[in-house]
Amino acid sequence: MGSLLMAKVKETTGIVGLEVVPNAREVLISLYTRTLKEIEAVPEDEGYRKAVESFTSHRLQVCQEEEDWEAIEKRLGCGQVEELIEEAQDELKLIAKMIGRVQGCLNCEVIGSTEIPLLSFFSPIEGLFV
Image (cartoon, rainbow, N blue to C red; front, top):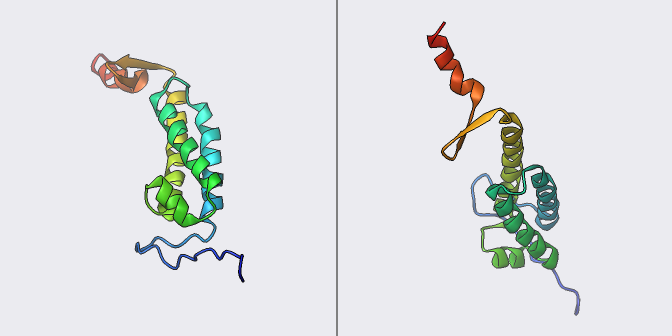
């Protein structure tokens, strides 16, 4: 076996309900690539987009550079790869909601720093004058 390196096999995450993902590196690379593609639908000047692009690009780079799940976890310092997978999946769901919010708020009024859809903002008031 000499020069062959054996990858350490993770047997458990130690977290109830969180199963080991044997190909976690590949799953993360796929999720991070998809995240970077989907976040492009959010306007470039949105702080959310900038933050997601920044940390996702970093995490993708680490996953591409490291072959071993332990090295990925150590370099990122954000938990186990299985937790990172769940976070990436949640991020994709949030991006979809953000895209819907941006598209759904074309008829919005900005009050302070909050966008309020005009229809839901004025509907209760209109009822008073009927």
